[in-house]
Image (cartoon, rainbow, N blue to C red; front, side, top):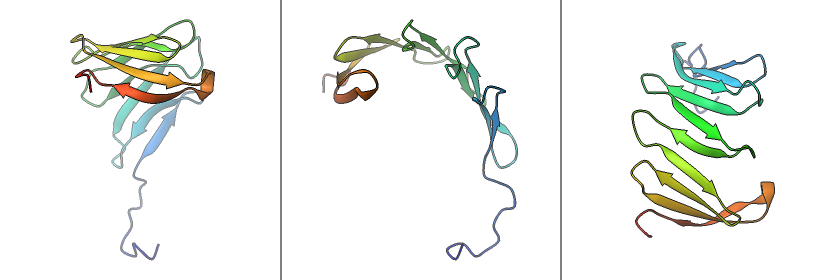
Length: 121
């Protein structure tokens, strides 16, 4: 690369590890140290149920029967619950602060059109 003619590192910046089902299982840094890990549901391919950064607690997820995240659980910090309605999603944290995402569209074409922050803005 003419922009970077100096000595380029021989090792990649990042390396990925995969499950036998093709799901991202781990991320390794340049020193080959694992910095992220991911856990998936045995029954539902590709459904992440947990992830972890090095030296941080594992964040876990729960889902409803439609495959939507209903809880994000962090044992060392804020956890969140998600409630889904036709035109909005209410997100409540473990300090009882609420944000609302207003949506338009259907199914995979649904998009966020407005966000109400916990402070009312």
